[in-house]
Length: 97
Image (cartoon, rainbow, N blue to C red; front, side, top):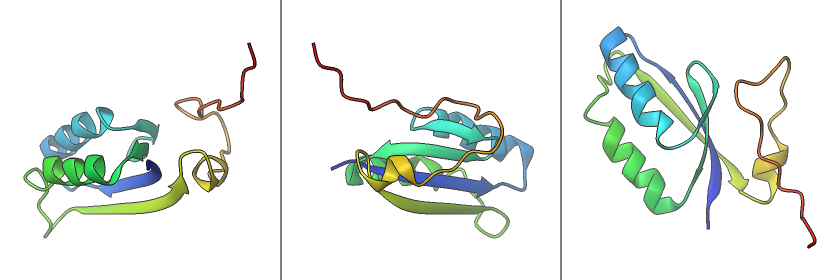
């Protein structure tokens, strides 16, 4: 089951920041410069962590991962936007053909 994760990071070094941003772009949508919304299975989340760990310097950098719930449940409804989001939230309305 895929879960919606809110992943935010604070990276002290510009080179590492760019590496983290590039790695994150393959796993989710940027909501703000250092905040991503990711729909990940448990295995995909583990893969993302394995990608990020060699980049980070945990003495200087911080990453926060929040599980917001199932993709088609609370995970879609619990993010509130003020202003224009950088990426449109997913539209999961059912379409009857």
